[in-house]
Amino acid sequence: MSSKDRREFLKSAAAITAAAVTTGIVASEAHAQNAGGYASKNFKAEDTIKKGEWRSSGADGTGIPLTELKRPLNILVFGAHPDDAELKAGGVAAKWAAKGHKVKLVSVTNGDMGYWKNTGIPLAARRKREQARASEILGTKCEVLDIGDGTLEPTLENRLKLIRLIREWKADIVMGHRPTDYQADHRYTGVLMQDTAFLCAVPGILPEIPVVPNPVYLYLYDYFQRPYPFNPDIAVSIDSVVEKKTNAVDVMDSQFYEGGCMSSDATLPKTPEDAKKRRAEIRRLLAGRNEQCADRFRAALIKWYGKEKGEKIKNAEAFEICEYGRKVTEAEIRFLFPFD
Ligand SMILES: [Zn+2]
Image (cartoon, rainbow, N blue to C red; front, side, top):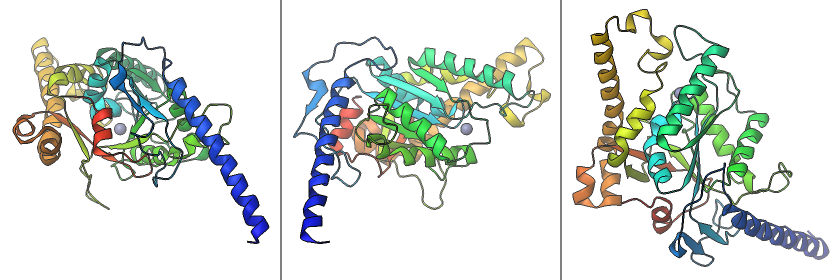
């Protein structure tokens, strides 16, 4: 590069950086506005971290500076089907929501193949209603994208759909499956989520929607070992909301009480007594998932809650930091997860 070319290059790079900083400020100020029609609660001075106390927002630590981070926080969770976000993050979502933070649970597919008895449009409509009831219980918002169950692909069109949702929600935190999760829709949800990182802060992409600074990206826990096991960077006790979470997931009858996609008529209880027994069994199974998470990731619970408290936690959810999102320090994680 000649010295003249280099000067021109640096000049345009400086202009891009200045524009990005300005956009960051706009995004930050806009943050205070309601996301998704939530009523705002009273948040105090300690709910804002000012510039200088907060690191830059780029995945490599050098990107767009975030001028401040404010509570209430906006959190967006992508699950592959209507129940995945609730199963993996319903507890922490209820905790955030109870403190006035704004959580939206998005199902990236419509779940229209997820029931043994019927499929297609009637099932998609039923699952949408089930997810809405669950969200009412958790205190969250929800949305189902109109993408067929079992057909999700990591296309540019789908990537832009997710970028749009992240920007419209002004998300501080984005969560989703790991791209190595057990089923194609789950894996591609993970790929799509990852592919929105950084790009949701680029003004030239979807220029009609204001950008957001690169959010913190977190993976939902799973137990798969290849190519590497889930690393629980963050673990949250959900003991105080486990009943609420179980109630929320339990309303999704098509998936649990009635058996989901690979069951049969034999699953359905025949007498009121059987029905009661079946309901209790399902609730126990659902509770068991949270207990298994606490046991598997006990060391992370002890890290965040201390030995005495961490050892006693019965129900948990865990999250792994995706390195393509904004980098966060331990203090910043505590700001984002403001729970006892
Ligand atoms: Zn699923």
